[in-house]
Image 1 (cartoon, helix red, strand yellow):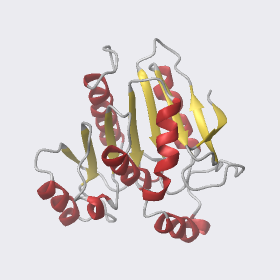
Image 2 (cartoon, one colour):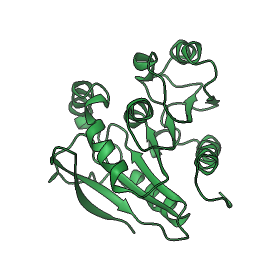
Image 3 (cartoon, helix red, strand yellow):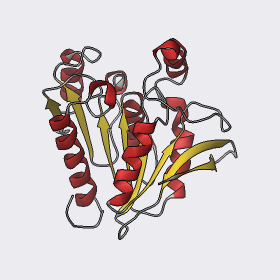
Image 4 (cartoon, one colour):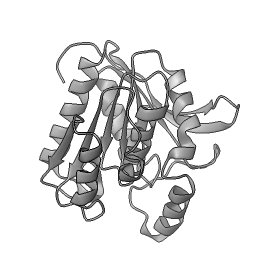
Length: 225
């Protein structure tokens, strides 16, 4: 239902994004930050589902060139090493913040952000460093612990799976110790519980519900979620 568009950061560097305009009365804008795989069919479908609820959604391609194709599948293990190397080079999202900021700037307010895995860490960094956001929801961001000394500038919630083999509970505890008042939700699930690879329906449903409730409390229109 959405479409591929081209945006540019504040220095004029172009990048691709998936845009899903609102299908109902507009509640706000959402910048959706993808996992290590890129703007997959899952990310595009999730953007479309939020658009059906009245959100104007942009899912920027954080690491790829402006003319690169969006991935056609969600899991591509044969190129995982290359994607992980790209993720490391970006500081797990830190150097992609100009694209995140440009996506925020492209949306009318109120603007929110949410991100998954690689994008979960990027969402945390956006909450701490970007301008123009009202609230942020970060899902299983594996490197948030490395940036735990930074403080979100807007209401922020975090979601982790209790059985996540990639994010040990001591890392989650370290984040909690650094931010004792930050809402951190734990689910009876593993990694990527919103995505097809690790989908846990009950956990995904509850985490997304909490996310939309946060957005509504932080400036989004009231209504059913």
